[in-house]
Image 1 (cartoon, rainbow, N blue to C red):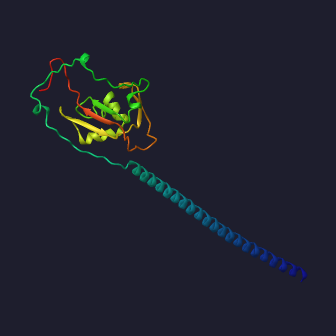
Image 2 (image 1 turned 90 degrees about the horizontal axis):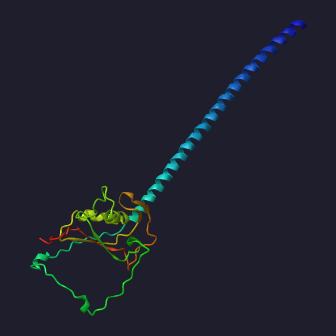
Image 3 (image 1 turned 60 degrees about the vertical axis):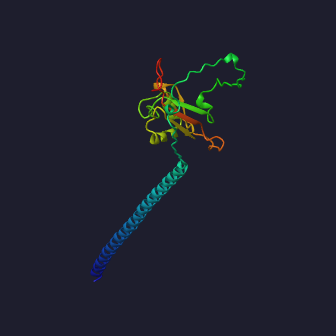
Length: 230
């Protein structure tokens, strides 16, 4: 009896151990599943947070880009005045060419004092002066092509001069173009094919007294020996 009881107890204990181990396994699996679910939830939240952060960063970049564009548009605002003035041709005023000889020795009017600047270029100290642009009937010359001499360099130094190409594609023999307010924004070095440019924006806004030089553009007509007006 005692031995059978011991065996029965042993069987019961074994079944209980087996049952307990099964329950423990199920509990561990459930805990593992719960842990996986929790980690999956955290991973999902992290991904959503990263995505939300990327969207916020992208939105901030778009806002900054829009702000810069608005600031740039504000900087580009200004006035462009255009007017055309016509006079009768010289042939209707003068019937011919009159030659006048001046005898300077007999002149008693004193000449005004002149000052010369030898340590600067014309474009370095000429914001309130008059410029004469005499080169090509097509305003700007070859500035949009491969030209790189006097007129083309002038247009590159003062980019606002490019607006004149819109209003005056070609100058007639009796026409002149006056441009006011084109400020220097670029510096140049060299000449022709060796010309190089560097940005040099003005540090102060134009004043009412001097808003840049006055440029007169005319076509450089050839006046060789014997040539004259038609």
